[in-house]
Length: 285
Image (cartoon, rainbow, N blue to C red; front, side, top):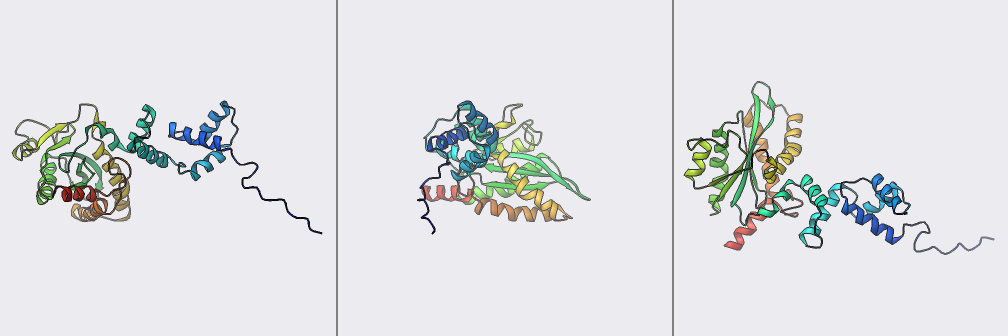
């Protein structure tokens, strides 16, 4: 005769106690860069025995399984003023999101403060080195990009003249200042082409502190994004015979970046760059 089965417990007899789960979540946010093996060792010192595999499972179930998960959780908690970030937490966020370094000098409108930079993106056969001249709005990461075979100031001016200023002019938004490093394409005498162009258009030129390139976080994050999501893929999968062909694909990607791609973390918190601009324009209108 088959005996009745024992009743099913609502919780497994070997399930992790709630207080241990809470402690694991606390550790993951307190030390977001740590791995589960390290958490296992830390818990053992507190007399709590739980395997790294179980820790990972618990973190996954609570939306903290990856460093990106913890980064976004910390940013959300900070934005909602539920926590005061420690130096360790702030440094962790800044590493994953360079924009976060600029949180103490927020711009209050699109165009108020733009970040500009130039970086080498690769070499095209028969053409040579190609550089991206990038400009990013610190209000909501709206970005512009122009490819050229040099880092000359004329190329840095071109992206401002052809793309950036017309965009803001069409929206009746003034461009207040541009932040750059101290590269030769940006800095020089009063007759330097870039300096002269900014002066003629009534735009303030701000420079990052010497030997502290980390003070231009918005364009730094953009450079990392465009390198990983566009250039490495495009230049691996395609053979470009001209800079113009690469620029055409870049222009299409920039439309995606600005109008379709949600930006996680500070400042957009999931909004697309175009949303930050147009919501401001609609409010002002």
